[in-house]
Amino acid sequence: MLTDAIGMLDAGPVVIRYPKGTARNVADSDVGSGLNARKLLAPANAKACILAVGKMVAASLDAAHTLDSRGIPTTVWDVRSCAPLDQAMIDDAARHSVVITVEDGIRDGGIGMTMADAVHHAAGGEHSSVHVLGIPTQFIPHAKPDSILARLGLDANGIADRITSSLS
Image (cartoon, rainbow, N blue to C red; front, side, top):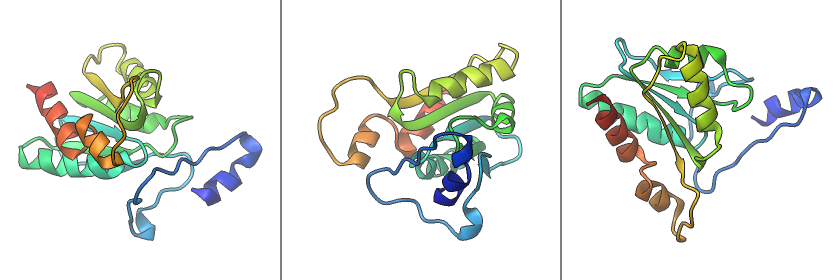
């Protein structure tokens, strides 16, 4: 991400957001580059699609594995760049019955709402099942980040349950 950010400096400001806690570790071959999103899971006949931002990628992958065991194949995208959004990712998401955006940032006015709007438009205004998951605009008592995320349904179980209920 740092190499990409340095390479994009002439195109305007760049932000790299580092979450509190342990980062997800992957092989060098699993690290994306540039502004393109990365499709991490693409099962045949996927009914649901998760658009995950940053730290939420790991929980989203775990949720997809849980959903697969429930008979719900789920596509997972690592959004990578919040602005501009990858149009290929948006177009792919619009082909699914249910789309969930997941971020550990503020939900109201956050990137999830921007992605939901883009998916809706990519589907010709016909996609009505896009759900935005993020941090509510309210006081949140102090706790470990993973505990807070779990309490807000932003862990693997919460994401999987939201998709399951959205499909039923």
